[in-house]
Image (cartoon, rainbow, N blue to C red):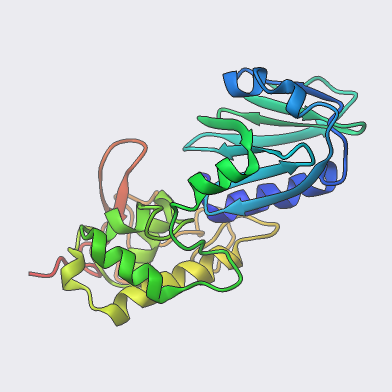
Length: 258
């Protein structure tokens, strides 16, 4: 599931094949791509950057390509002598590779300042070099709600998705539905400090892990483990929510505050 770390890993994969290269051809099913082919084709990629779960490809035309993968989007890179994979929302072709984005709900081409203005509404990027925890706490208090809601709100802090939501609540021994007014600043700051630590640790090769173990089935504490034994106390992990927003917790380790 795409979260801040996986988007950062996409950027690592795309930079060697796109940055400094001229876009020889453009294909895409998204309307914004089709109507802006001339602002992409024939122009050089200057940089690829991430903001939370958003990836931005900047071109020397003064335009940028903004992609948000949503729940199911993904990037694929293949040699230029092979067929573009799937029905891509956008596919950028250089002299050596196709970089194709599949299944993403947001694929938008616009002037770079316009894209930056939209992204400026997000909270602090948890993968930036310096994360302003004080600003995150201020935004969280202004918003209110449950811990799960706060963690998923990208205007509070950018980068956490559904996997980290459940894992961070478990590590803090807080029920995901705990109201923010029952969590003090020190505990909430600790949740976001863990978010920074885990996101950074998972940028690079290898399967994402929040437990420190990379063996299949050992990567998470509670996420995806409904009905299985808690790794701490052996109670059965519980879950709630729809297919795309399931929340997991341990009923013994994460008792709801009364």
